[in-house]
Image (cartoon, rainbow over all chains, first blue to last red):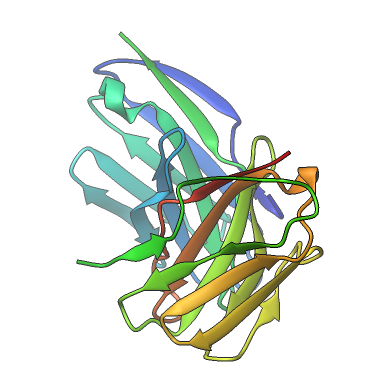
Length: 109
Length: 112
């Protein structure tokens, strides 16, 4: 993805915690999205951060540092169904989102 | 409930055929998008529209055109399908800037 970097693959164990990082270009920043995508399905919205800090939503939390151009998605108490691709996307000054290539997370028993 | 509907889940076409992919949203959203998604390349924007009869090229518009005659409907047209257009096509809509994208369920197009 253009100016968005996230790891290609990650592996974790059921019940554990995993952090997926995303770095992006800071110019013209207008918010950072995280989406989840299961194989063969459309992406579904997880979170949106526009201010610095941590936002928690159940087992999933998302963090943003605007000055560092950095975000992470934290998944707690991992379940097998969390095996999916996690997409980071940056909103800019126009209506288009800049997407990362996604992080494929495999949760093992 | 919010809904973006794509007309076909799977589609098989032959090289040279004209292909229409339809997308309808029922949320009165101004902005609609067409993406394609390929392994290792992520989501790539083909075209988007921010109003009826308005369209803008995305990152990979070559070989595609679009039509937005009504607010709720955004069509993607492959004038002459080629094998390199085999892909997952995703339609999405958004009410305004800084809002989350709502995706359709996708159309897996195979061009033989």
